[in-house]
Length: 295
Image 1 (cartoon, helix red, strand yellow):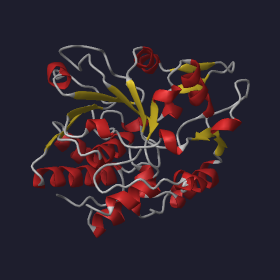
Image 2: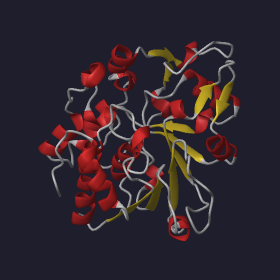
Image 3: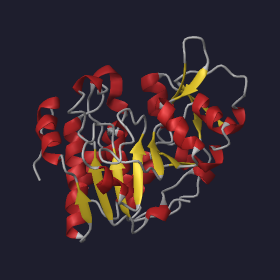
Image 4: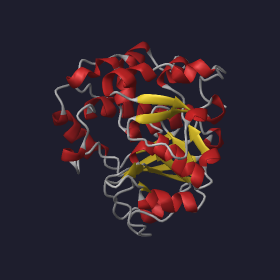
């Protein structure tokens, strides 16, 4: 169950559900209970599953460990360094992962991301999983969905057919995270994460936390797991692929959040290693109309 720095077990089924209405109203998402999912059902990207509390929590097994987080940006000349960490986490689609021992490493001990983005239907209606993700699932790599609102019915069923559904841990909802982070974030930091920006297409119902990039959200969750070190590779806030970023994301907010984690790690004697921080920062300053507050 959910534990970690400042977190307690809320123990309520309703705690997971708080926040789903924003997705229902903003995107037309329809949520199903797990017992309502049918093997022969016809689903799409906007039909999703609300997980039970039994599958909701933090990765408490990561406490005190050195973590490499490998994002979807290109990584070169870092393979040995990445693979030397206690745990190697790769994010969602892993679209640039070459399994190069010298370039981007060969190890993965944990997949973390959004199941909705790695299992989808083709035009004929057949369900397929991202090749790299399917390979990790077959290899028995641990699985962590970083949001309870991004498990599609198709992803749920695909994992069940693969015999790995019981191994999927789903991160706490933003409401549960909000409750836990009061213990160690300042009022200003809480305001940055949980305020609701006025954005396009009626996104004002989503907090900044819900709009964070997957890697940034993961870093906050790892902090809550009380890890000893976080090293970021290929996390460039879409600097390398500016045309691929979803319109609701604001890299400037992600930069501010990541630098906040960096400051807290430094203050507590932990290690936060981000080799391309400066490149990501230069791009984040011009990627949106929001002001970046320098560290």
